[in-house]
Amino acid sequence: MIVLLAGFAYAGFADLRDREVTDRLWQLMGGVGVLLGAVSVAPSGWVPVLLWVVVGLFTLQHLFPWDDVLGAAVARYADPIEGVGYLAAILLVGVAVWRVGVGADQVPVPVLALLLTVLFARALFELGVLYGGADAKALMIAGVLVPVFASPLLPQSAEVATLLTVLPFSINLLMDAALISVVIPVAIGIRNVVRGEFRFPRGFSGYMIPVRELPDSFVWLKDPLSGGDDDTPAAETSEEDRQERIRVAHELEAKGVDRVWVTPQIPFLVLMAAGSVTALLAGNLVLDLLVHL
Image 1: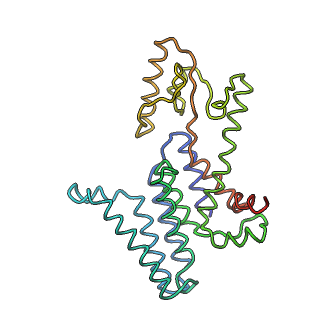
Image 2: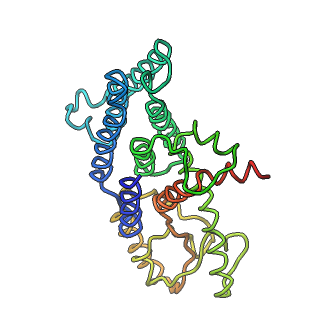
């Protein structure tokens, strides 16, 4: 948990400052997580250790550009190769559960939690729910370092406590992060009201800034003339994004536009960092709210 909180804090800061997080951070955290997990299940025998290491390495392969070293002829088959890896991991764990069951000296619960976390994160990424690859990697890393955390520091109701024993920690973290994100439109709305610039409904999603501030602001641009979204394709890197904002700022200044409506680029990793702290303290706030409704 200490490694997770420290790593997420750094990742959130880096994403907020540069809008990029190096893969080396995830690689380091993932490697530490696999080693710590192997040590924790070692007293149960070699089968739990083997299963943990296999699923752990399967998780880590998402953090390394292994397809780049295959050569162009083989790299084009990277997706099918990875698909075989997914199938093999699922079959291995499934057969193990069927043959020996689930338990400390059988298939450890952390192995199942980690595998479910990886499948969950990949599905959310493919569906576009987790927009950035770093978000999906961060969720997988949370599964490696803290597969299950059923004892938050604050007291839990009996119903929520039961659910926390079976839910992967990463799901609690993600649900808490999603709940915390509700604060963002409220804060933006208050900012616009205070400045006398609130317009419903977009007053909850964006605000006005001077055009001269556009190049150095991490924002998405709204067309100041038509009120529609800018249709420019998304930039691949933060520097490409900045160069695009510089170009647009020059165009707007040439047209005599002084202020422009923008939407802030809120790094989801910052919310995930907050979600990890919340999950540590209070478990799953969403489940807690649902139970008490």
